[in-house]
Length: 423
Length: 209
Image 1 (cartoon, rainbow over the protein chains, first blue to last red):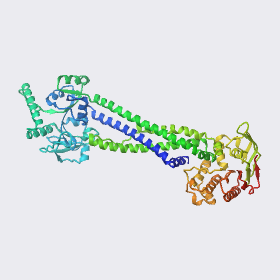
Image 2 (cartoon, rainbow over the protein chains, first blue to last red):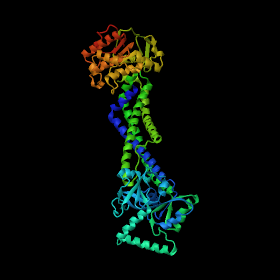
Image 3 (tube, chains in turn blue, purple):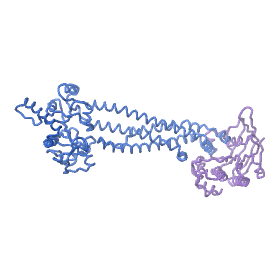
Image 4 (cartoon, each protein chain N blue to C red):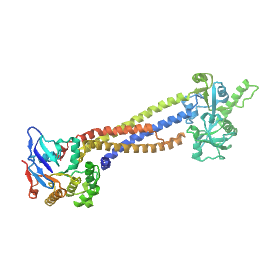
């Protein structure tokens, strides 16, 4: 019955209630979005980083190299020579090496030339069909299959570059031969093919557009590399001679190599070796500042909502003291009055918390939709983090109880006789 | 049944009240009159256990209420004393019916909904039970207060100026109603008032000075 009074009282002054609930909802939803975002973000980054000790790529920003090769977010810093990279891939300290060649996209999804090492390295399973075997055969990630409805046997043309609006390579069609099982990793958003497909797609393109400036430079480069190659290997002909790839993901057997290669490689080659763990930590540190600033802001809003509850309860104490006196003369104990006031605040906080969690989920859903469009990165709004959100609920309740404690004690210690005599 | 002996009370060293002894058996009405400042409300609060007397005894239903500790006194007040106040107080957020039922729940931990409905019906409030108290007229509100005071079959009904905010006609109706109900429920009724209109209605009277 006390809870019924508390519940009815909560809705009897809707304006006060509304203000407190809005503030609570705002703070809880911001915090819950941040909690989910941070957790899922780190999870995504860490799961894709599994087993990659170093990334070989063109010189430039190491963070850019990691983002482009491991997470497929940024544009790559440039290309590297396959022969030069192969020299390092074949060293005995390397446990596994996954070459990556970028060039095209299909509706914004990157087409990545690689070897079957990619699926082995990330433990990816084929859900339907087979892995690519011949040129221009592709395996698509589960999200792509679901989002644009690609099926086995479908064919499509790639678009040059990493944006949808590029030039279409309409001379060779890719053919879907397999679909990957969902893994929660970036592969869900990738189209995988063999490296040769990426090369052929572009060689072919350049034959046709031999007079374009870019192609011209490219051929000049190739010629140069060829010349150099011929000088050194007169007898054997390396089929990869003069070919370029974008990056190589390396897993090493040797901790010493993990430490020394990032220094040795740039000194001796035109490449760099970047450590994903190091770069991602740097990235998290950068994000961390923003996330903690937002978290402080949200707790600030929660503090203000606590003050709002306090003011609302305290202000109504004066008019409600007759209500309290009435309860006492009908036999209510002092403790029941204390409980009544606390309960009203607890109700507010619980409603605010539930609304906050719901709005947080809705917010994250929209965030996920836009980040999916822009970065091909999706978040799961329906994940519940019982520990973190349980802590958040406790924090919300604590704010409510602290805000109500003074009004509750005032109700507890109300002098009924005096109150009624002055009525 | 309520009895007092030699009850005194003081708010301060200079202001002392010495109240005449009261003996009001079940079913009887006692009118306590007196000018402002003679301690009418103070006496009522002493009888209701809201104030502690400096000296004396107050016995309700053979229970010396001064012997009870705070929690027991709260429970005893809920079960044995019905109070009607000068102004009508309600839990504004609850309906008329819930306001009356609430008193039974606080005192006895059970919701006497049927009984509340029948008392409200008796008092002519049948059509108003689901309204909010603020939607009723002052006279109707006072009758809801009466219903609330009666819901637990109290031994004693204490009424503080129950008629002072009512017009002549309603004042007499309410006073007679109270007295009749006290007889019907076999409660002792004590009305504290300065309302001269009631003096002619009741035989048993005490004047404070």
